[in-house]
Each structure stands twice: as structure tokens, then as C-alpha cells.
Image (tube, rainbow, N blue to C red):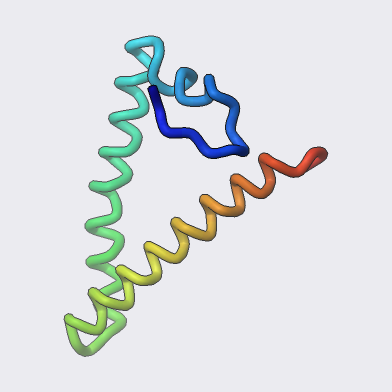
Length: 82
């Protein structure tokens, strides 16, 4: 039903989606996080002189941080004792 990685138990998605309240909370969390990145990136864009350089740099930085934190979570989740 849900795509799953080998490091995650099959019922991991059910924690976030099964009760309706949890699904609404998860949707709001992701939606509001997305909205909060707009003013954050706007403020950081003033550190650059060219708007194209600012957008590309912040896109790469956000993508890289998201990838690193996600991989860190899966690594810590798969290692016993962390």
C-alpha cells in the first residue's frame, strides 16, 4: 500500500496516517513547514548580490540539508543502540 524502505517496518506509515487526527496534523506540519521556508529563504537571499545565484544556492542548500538529515535518520534508525 505504501512504498517502504528496507530499514522501516511495514506499519511505519500507519503511525502518521491511520487516525484522521494524525493525518491532518501531518498534513499541517508539512504544509506549514513549506510556507515557513519562503520568508526564511527571502531573508537569506539578501546575502547575495545576484538573485539567480541566491535562488540556486538556497535550492541546493535546502535539498542537500534535507537529503543529509533524511539519510542520517535512516542510518541512526538502522543502527542498534543509537
